[in-house]
Length: 275
Length: 294
Image (cartoon, rainbow over all chains, first blue to last red):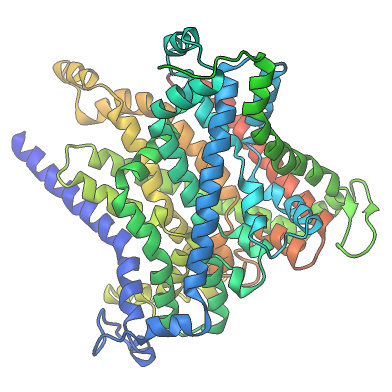
């Protein structure tokens, strides 16, 4: 019996390791291709390392495409969207969880109903709205429509509902206003929920492709994913340069992941625990 | 806990302060567009000319549009393959990782890498891996004596290629959800079953599966809804080709709106997508009462 368990464990480790290699291999292949010359890429059988490591591809990346600008555009848009959503979601979540106002339940049901609307249904009307405001080809088109999220509002409300009532009763007796209660009690207590929502929004915004594809035209305004895809046309078969560009575009989020791994993981698991 | 503001305002005043910024954004950028999209789907409009009200014209055209049926079929094909396969693999991995494995954190991060990477970047890498002559995949296949297909330029193999990439990318996400669900199952159930002499399979069948069902339900609903909306990897890897073999609903919607400038037609496709997602959600909610144990 014990022996069988031992064998089982070994088999499990082998399977998990093989699976893990499958996960990593494309990343390894991307880096290895980005360090080869164009000729070395088209040699059969392929090897993981070329004759010598070629760094020039990384310089070619910024030849024609302002990768630094893409990075700052992505960063600017993502940070603004994350901060705004944390603010609007926690404020409205507090109102739905703790305040009294007419049509509260109807309004919340409306928020919930929009959760099942596929985002692509909003694509055409949002584009028309952006045209109306003359925000096409401006970062405003990627920021303003994303200041509010029904999902974020729902998440914050669910979390606020779990905070004991006694705390705010005590604060109210001390003469605290609802804003004081929100700011001094609810926000400090909901750091994990805020971190979760923040990481989630950050991932979505940083990797978003459809919106920039539809709203942005000029190269100087592109975000990383869109900049990357527009390189495709120009370097269609120059794989080393393209792979160098993908490496550069992935680095920031990978670094963020290794720094705040626990938050990423908690973010996913919390999203699955429906309140 | 001393608060300085001792002024009393009405409840309504506070509620509006808290709610208004959010409500404004919600109405202008979520609620109105959902309704507007419905209205636009009854129009014939190319952005430049007049808007023509054509009633159900767009929907009637969809019904007879062979391309629409093709992309609808492709979307369903993509969904019925990637969802079950992806869920089975990620459940298996989660169960394996739940066996008090050493290096759990390392495995977890490795499987999670594709999840956080942008779809555009990984789709480009996979495009290179699928290269028929110099790609890594066909080289690896040749090592075991298989002559690999011309993946992305083959009408038969392009869709499976996109599927493999999609499954590879989402595994870690579902695995984490399952892992959280598994860790929520109390050990006492298994201990009791062991005293009764239950074997590995009956424990899995009678404890794990029922107690994990809420997680499974959530993962299935999310996966189906997401796979109905597949777009990024198709745009990057195949542009819907060859011969529309990988064109899906959202890709056709995108083409109609932003390449052919048919706003009304695109909106009617959007509403068909909405309707499908809605129906799937309803069916799953109805069916879940039968097999989800809360």
